[in-house]
Length: 284
Length: 159
Image 1 (tube, helix red, strand yellow):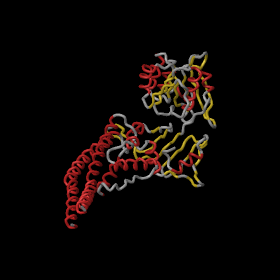
Image 2 (image 1 turned 45 degrees about the horizontal axis):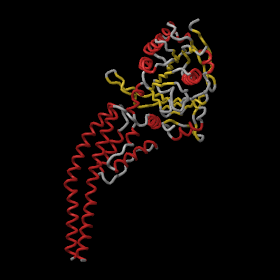
Image 3 (image 1 turned 180 degrees about the vertical axis):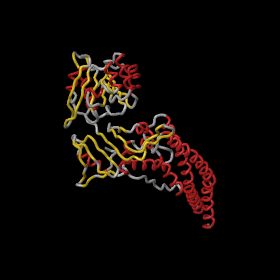
Image 4 (image 1 turned 30 degrees about the horizontal axis):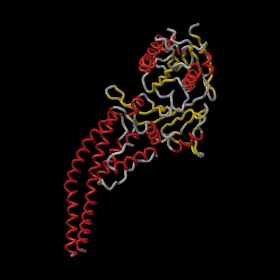
């Protein structure tokens, strides 16, 4: 929590077990998601107001006062701290010759605190594993339900139970952090594009399974297809409300039509975690 | 015998005082040589490893004054304090102002912008190093010589 300002840090420490998200908007009360419920953050009875200075300071601290390292992430609207806390950034986008240079005049932050919930993905694990072999899986849900938490736990379960060589392509530094137990058979490529992760990871790290978060473009779909055609299983996540919505996204539709996944599982939020709402066996 | 002893004492005293005054100039040379080195190290970091500012500030240089300054900046970052560059005693007030500006720009922008800033300061620091080296050659040895002469004069007056 080194990156937070004093009062906000105290609030987060007090709620550290249950806090999922913190939203700071310039000169507005700080809103926190505590155990799935949004509330106005208060410290010693006073409502916490996020100032421009707070927002700036938090972001600079999260960037270790080294914006030159993080600007590529800032351009994409986020920063992930060493401990895996992802900070979404609102502000003024600066362009030069139609090329985005950075975001400046930061005016809002969405800080998401990651959690490791041991065995939260056990139900998913049981559905995709049979006779020691894994099926490729697409997990879909709206943002904030727990897809990343689920894939993190799946990595641990598969690593511990099946000892498969797993490659985690962690583009946004969200899945892997030193503090998480991901088992002993995981390799991690952090901060690289999914394209690099799929093509170079398969060539150099010879994984049995690739785990990747948030598919969101045709380029990502190319990577998944390449992995499938290379005989490597894939566990991926994507944003959608349900399966019928997911197939309306061209890149997901392509992967599902070509049967790059064996299963598609939809998740929904419940207090303290998530539950499975839909399991589709693509091969049926 | 007493005269010889007095001569040694006064000459040593005068020479030491002169040496102490001349140290200021050699400290300034060391400081600017170190800041040039720091600036170049930062440029190299941006070109390859891109370690965070804290790691770069942790490196030690020839000048104790610069090391102290880097330590102070490093601590103030982590304590969320505003930067407060100490008056080292080696720098003039305009130079402290320049240093304050320099350090307040570090880490605050993307790689290309940082490189432009560092390259600009590279020229400024190299120029400053030349100036303080000339200053040291001119006044450093003068201080020592003056000290010895004052010692001699004191001896003559005393005897």
